[in-house]
View 1 (cartoon, rainbow, N blue to C red):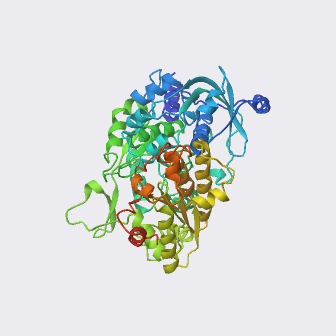
View 2 (tube, rainbow, N blue to C red; view 1 turned 30 degrees about the horizontal axis):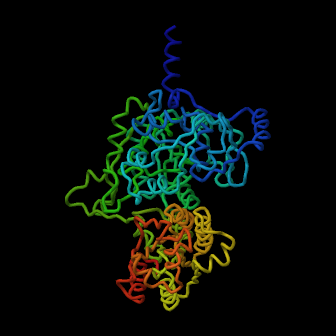
View 3 (tube, rainbow, N blue to C red; view 1 turned 180 degrees about the vertical axis):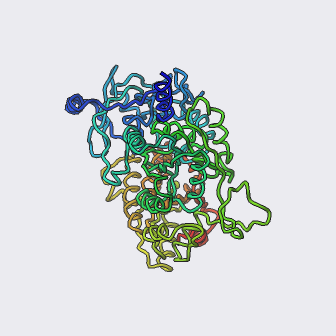
Length: 581
């Protein structure tokens, strides 16, 4: 009996951590049922998932979001937003919702079912709608992100690109979203747990990242694994990260190269199809729960975990150690053990990395920021071996060859008569005068005559016009070109959509030509304002249709205060300070 008890105790010690809520909630139907539901899905209302929704669905279906069994209904949503808890009291910090527009929601009957499709129209799951509700997105931003500042990428998406209606209900999985890259690294929670069992791993410390890893990250993760006596899981987010981040293809190649610099058998790499919200402390708690579902017993939380940087006033959105404090508060309930770690810095006089908290007064601390690294890559300057490994540098140089120019979209927006088209043409001339880079111009009037011919001036048509401009601009940027856009673009959500399209491939620079309405009317060569005032033109921006002023453009220029030449100088000077011109 004693031997049996000892054996059971040993097995218990070696068992992997239980998923959040106790059960791994995998939502895929058995093959025969899935095939039947797939055939029936063709007759259901169809919803095409955006990138965030697609990532969320994948983690719902494979159990990464256990204990969730679908998108949150109103009671669960309210509990998560206000208390970080589902309605049954389970700890859960981030709302997982299916947002749609009012027109789609209005077509749904009671207990409707919806086919959830990828962008190719492939049905992935069916949602049985149990709740339809209008959220207070301002309050959601304030509670979840701690701010309503649109400089925060999560806030900008929530307020400007999220549908006004949320649908809640259970999901039945038909098939996983298809992936054709790094397929051997895309393990579900069940598959990764099986891998751990097969390799005898029971204490596993997980590391979250959305950036390439260098020597400081290797040192941090090695020390964390040694500290808790665990194996190391490097599990980067590859679903969607912060705009401007290094693409996941390049990052994964870097992770694979870095993996060779760990002791044999210590570390493994698996990818997480997560759409990050950059939500700081709440997001860190969410990351820990997800890693628990994947089988990790420990989770590394570093400085400013999942922080998006600084707000519109130049202050950090979150205290650098707020995430560590929040996870420590919920440590017992979480189950997964938090491993807090300060940033690692290089002490040149000791030729070693040390925790930032252990730096001595006589230490010669060196560091290379992300901006400095990009500058060195761009100029072909040396990158020291103390910072990263040569094989990682090689991959980064292949992706960012010396003297190559990143694609760039200059998006001028403002009222009719504000001077945006004139300023855009002046900037084009300056760019062509000093550079051989190709420049494409998408002027508002020209786009209306060709690309958007047939569209009217309803809000929907105006949004479609800007989305078309954003798509064409993104293609120019993807191939390293410069594109100049000069539409009125009166609505914030359409401008945000254009930004999102472009930033998948390069830089988006919003330039608000802020010339006051009275000046624009005085310049009215075409008589459009006079016609609008007389009621002959309906829905004219600035008169009887709103212009939603950009909150945080990269540049704001009033052409009533400076000449066209001076305004163009301001644009070129800004581009030069950003190393974009």
